[in-house]
Length: 524
Image 1 (cartoon, rainbow, N blue to C red):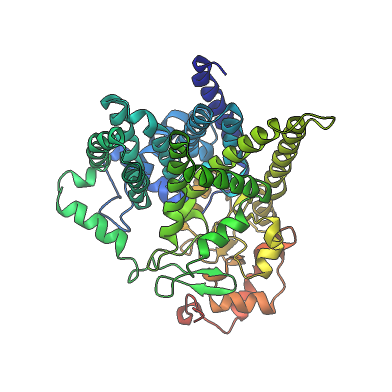
Image 2 (image 1 turned 90 degrees about the vertical axis):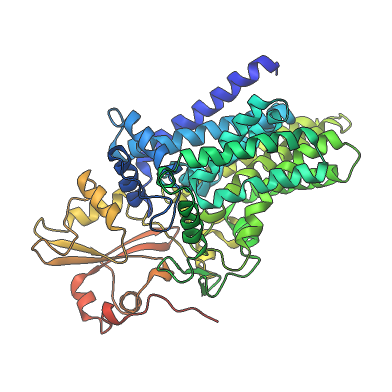
């Protein structure tokens, strides 16, 4: 491809991804953190910043992205899609940048295959929609990686890289690990141009973080200390959230085994794309020990960006909840590795002797089939993409049998489940939800998505009790119901229950009162 056409092609890739995300957003139900994120983002216009030095210390960047996109799209998109517009648009920009960087450093095949892999990871596809911190964090991290090569060429490019890195720091505390791969790469290769870029870009990143977090403005010293204290001291707080992993419960006091990130990667990425990523990793590894320093350094930077959160999440003391969400950026860089893997396969086939079989044509056809098979996952799991597991563990049924949590996010409370609840609940009756996000329920009520009462204060009797199949959130009375009562309605995916609706009379029959129940049990 001619160099002048590459930016236009990247723009086209970003536009296609943006359209795909906006078009599919109404399918994806409101997920766990969105209600809280929208409430905080909605306060920004009034000068209220519930970020950085409050609650769990989330930085304000993702709130700014949500608020800006919401304001742009509120007049022409459905309410939930409008609220998600900013994160979706930012993610589309990152997809275009990933395509551009891979195409420039490797080939058009690498760019297209990498961008396609990014979108065809079901869990990544879901998080790309969600109005919360993880999609924007991933997008900004990818943008910072894409900008680092040019940053070595001059101070303006270094300033842009620093600004993107500062935005990454501002999306979530996890983003503070983003400088590490660039620092390590610079040290390994003793690259003076990169050292100058770091020297200029890192102060810019800190300045951007400061500017994007107004709670720091009036307390520039104490505010920074509070920010780090809140993000590093969760073990003794109510944010010590458990998770079930391979049949056992874990939390901050009982950390996940060190190999958890490897297992999550192995079972939540489509097997074909995982294989391509393995080819890309092998190619980068071989180049790194070979005799082509110019080509190997590009791949090693990508490798370091993939590894950093994989390693951090494996350390004791880090939050354990929500599956892949807390190291989501690693999957974006693994998708880029899949792009490199596709490039390497086609390059290898092109070097084979041409005979009747035409190796390059066969390799291209194989890649097309692999990507087509991967795209089936989006259709098969829709709209519960966050419950995706691959064939290596037997899909969602195999994962549930192995003791992985089938769902986390209340995304099983989809249009079908809501239609059933509306049809079987009289207007004067109420619905009780087990461990819900009350912010989500409030937004859903305001937007007309949930048309029955659910909170305690209004008059009316409860008709139903709704449980999502997230074992780490179950109370003893939930377990009693699951074992002893027959649900009136059950939402399943591939035969695995994700959400169950019980008669409230069954809930009242439970001998286990909520006030006396433990939140979870940790298996030693």
